[in-house]
Amino acid sequence: MKELVNYILQFGNLNQQQIDLILSKGQEREIRKEKYFAEAGKVAAEVGFIIDGIMRVCYYDNKGEEITKYFIEENNLVVDLESFDNGICSSCYVQAVTDCKIIVFSKKGWQELLDTIIGWDTIVHKIISKALIQKVARRSPLVSEDATTRYLSFMKMFPNVINRIPLSYLASYLGITQSSLSRIRKNIR
Amino acid sequence: MKELVNYILQFGNLNQQQIDLILSKGQEREIRKEKYFAEAGKVAAEVGFIIDGIMRVCYYDNKGEEITKYFIEENNLVVDLESFDNGICSSCYVQAVTDCKIIVFSKKGWQELLDTIIGWDTIVHKIISKALIQKVARRSPLVSEDATTRYLSFMKMFPNVINRIPLSYLASYLGITQSSLSRIRKNIR
DNA sequence: TTGTTTTTTTGCCATTTGGCAAATGTTTCT
DNA sequence: AGAAACATTTGCCAAATGGCAAAAAAACAA
Image (tube, rainbow over all chains, first blue to last red; front, side, top):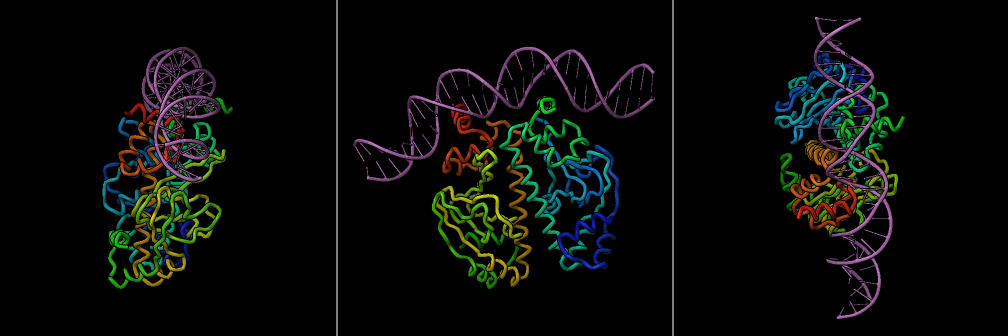
């Protein structure tokens, strides 16, 4: 759980008692590659923190194509905020891309922390804002760059991810076809 | 200021005194078409709420091309959060696309509200989360759709914006060239 | 109105990317 | 190891988009 504690303390200070309380609400869980942490059509009921592994958020577009919206790496929260906060059905799947180890908080446990620990809500706000800003920042350049540039940027940004994920996931994330991505790889070598 | 009050009250309850305090910190300002509300390289020092008009956030990519990252319409907050919160230089310009009327809060006034009004931070957080989630939701489909679909989606989503903005802004927002966008328009008619 | 400037459209052709299917390579399971 | 399932690469050609420059249209100013 050390990773989670370090992560949280970046965003604000907590005493040992508060940290222990937080950890007491978290439950460690393993998720096998390709298994789902959350599914479209269901209401998100848990907040996860990835200790090890890579997950992805994906959905099916109106042509039935599976689109990877983003990847989430180690040391990040994973939750469909819109669904979790508002109790509405999620439109995305959250799937383990590699075998993952995560810490899970139930909605109930999470709420208890918010009610109990003074300042926890502020920390959570900061974490969430940062994550959302990061999502926008990562997704935006993909619109204007050409395919090769997108791939190179991804490599630069996630050097340790690129060899752990299937090409098809990456292609849909970058907004290109598998074959195009394969050709781009070839040209770069 | 009625618009601002309605907007805020969607996210939480406040009494009249609190509302008056908020409004007292806001200052009405007009921004002429093409003028800037905020500039790249400067630290964001104000939060704005657009009463009337359309603004856009844009930057110059490494080829020197001007890219519109998103449009912001009436009844939305406008602020570069990363810059405003962390005191770092902004990487984007915020520019009026049409003549705009906005309500402006200085960083100082904004902070005073946060310090004074209990629950205001929660409301602000909700507003910001929603806005960020919306940004991701709008930007994401642009990656995977083809150019014509992007344009049609934009038209559907912003029917009352499309005729108020120059083609060049829209093209860079959609990630295509002006000429392509012009041809797409032609084919649709 | 007239002339000037800016924006948008269009033509021509090059380049990029997609679609499909077959071939090759890799993983998984027994 | 061998077979089956799955992932990636490749070839071929079609379709989409870009680049550039000129023409047309629209907006603006005198």
